[in-house]
Length: 212
Image (tube, rainbow, N blue to C red):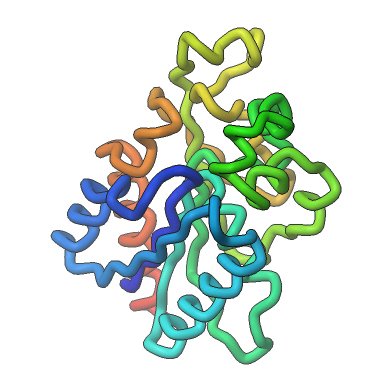
């Protein structure tokens, strides 16, 4: 199975090295795309993600994995693909917010946040822009962390959260499968538990395809 991974804001593809290594060890073909929010707009990055998906799609079956902002980019790219493009067999969203992230809203007017996150940071804090990004009509799994972080715990009150986003911020009526894991936001892509969830799901997909 081909697997495309898109990392979260402030991270790089290296953040998922353990997961990518495990996927390769099980025989899957892994590809990644990197970006830097401080110098690229959301639209510019999504255009590159879209082209990468098109390149992968012509080679056969594939799944896509997005961590945090990376999941939003994948959703945005998939809703504007040419009609003839083969869509992914599955979309995995790792701690990826569907509604405005409260930490982004809290920080959106701070100069440091603006310099590092750029246009993407403003998107994360703006309801109208997030609502424009739909949920692709393909199977989806949301994997959300529940291990909070002491410095940000006060912003979530009693809501389950991973230190950056809450479980509720990652929920959507069109995501039927939500799996909670006791992991902080940053380590979702490198978690062995998360890798196993993705590997098991890919195995199921391949078994289904083999019977068609």
